[in-house]
Length: 332
Image (cartoon, rainbow, N blue to C red; front, side):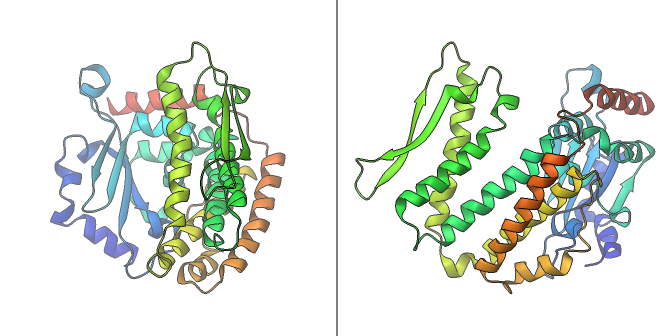
């Protein structure tokens, strides 16, 4: 499906919610492609993902109503409220930043306010993308690599891979959870008394007067890593091969996009230069040894970009707030 067909599709009755929902309609300031179409990695069977931003109504800004996002699962459409969009962008959320960097011919709706948002995308860029793009993608790829090699890796080595992934995730805890210090939770490998386990991950915790909800969230994030490893290690090879190839392709794409952002080249969601290569990965035309050899190179390039980036430690919150206020004033 080409872009013109997508334009025709969103004008059909299937997408009437875009025009009839009280939070959408003329409140939509940006509507664009998402997923594989936005990246240029779509195939004939790809879903048509639509992503957008809608400015909240007066009732949400001044009254008791609330609007954060609209989702229609039948059509794979997600439209975020403007305030949530700004907050997620400041956090370096890839889904939001990529929405601000789609190709111009992929813009299905773009108002003056939406253009203003896209034109100031650099306000949201900071070293936070090191975690949200690179560290996340690398951790996922190494987890995938571990699962694929599970037959040849000793159990203790698998456990070390899992620990590395959790520790990679812990780097952003200081930003996400107040009062958290890495030394408060010490993770390490030691001999296990469990049957079929040579070694396992243990932890020493030194927390006092710590918010229960923050600890619950930290535990949940670490638990999800363990759960993901378990799911990968019990997968059906034949059934999941295409899914794993697609997953690897998107993680590699994240590394490439993140490196460009750190190099100061802006956000380029559509991967024209790497499109054929990414589709080759998706199609299974590379074996996993070749894929992870490429990952080693891309990871090294990403680390170099992270070490030499001129991006600030934190995004420009004040300027982002002024942009948000400016857009609201125009629409009110």
